[in-house]
Image 1 (cartoon, rainbow, N blue to C red):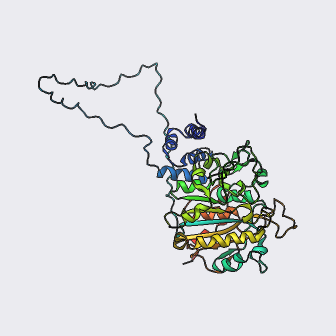
Image 2 (cartoon, one colour; image 1 turned 135 degrees about the vertical axis):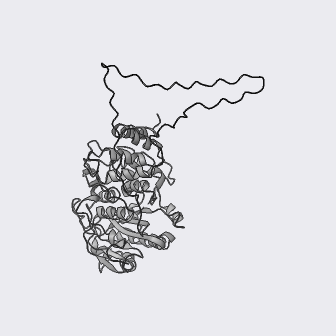
Length: 451
């Protein structure tokens, strides 16, 4: 069995064992990563929550017949076809004589009917609201005041973009480290010891346990196939997605490549000023790695300019991340290069206008400028403790938000995921479905009295 097919067979076997032939056939027939969705929903012991809803939606959208009733047989065999001149008629198979089956002997056990697989609950198909293209551009923050304050070290962000959009002044991170916030943004999984260390080792989970919402407990970097992502949800809902990573290339050839990550249990050693896997949360989920979603949709940043040319070629969801230097991470630039907040601001000044000038953005787009990491605002400053929840702020840009407005609500990366889910008519995923997680989607959808 090839290495490529081995994970697929594992997912198929798990789905068939846990959910019966109906779900196993659905996995086998899908041409997208539905198999990860099925396997994930099947492992939910309570059969409820966002994973069950996602499974139901996948089943409703599937067109493959799972158990077709046998075709009715004619009451009598058709008349034989006339034979050619000089030849005998072709023999026809005899129809079995109708008869009643003999009654079973008294000593024989009575056959029990096979239990029927419960029908999946009816769940409406995913449907986006008035926003149908979401762009998430993720940087490293020098701190709230250094980004948005009067003495901002990011003038393009604070003086050019800020007046055009809505500031989420209460947006805070789950951790000072970057990777756990990025993972929470696309997968709703909470920080753990490995991700708080930015996964310097690309380690697998060895002790993963799931709760009823699909939240994984334990420690590790690469989440099991049952842990779904926003990308899985979008694919099941009929939406497109892509991640765009600056400088992503094959480490051996140096050529641009898709879905680049270390070997299992290997070290993530990014070159100075180059691509780092820790900037790319999609490579930390087996649901995308094993079933092709990452290989297909996780691409070098250079592809974004091409995709932005028309609304048709622009994905419904785009996640954009610079390399560590241009993200603004301290100490990650080659000597002589612009570094820190100035580097992040320059990256934003290059790419934000390309996004906001695109047909998709102008028609129904939302650009979210967010931060996934907190760095010292200046060389020599002390970084916050990893367990702190620093306030960094975020900015929403869209024709559906009021210019120069502020929303002081308490938001986190879970809120970012929940809001995106709601914009596309999807169920909140994992920890994003928590009762205390606040969403900014209602206002964008016009549900708060907006126009």
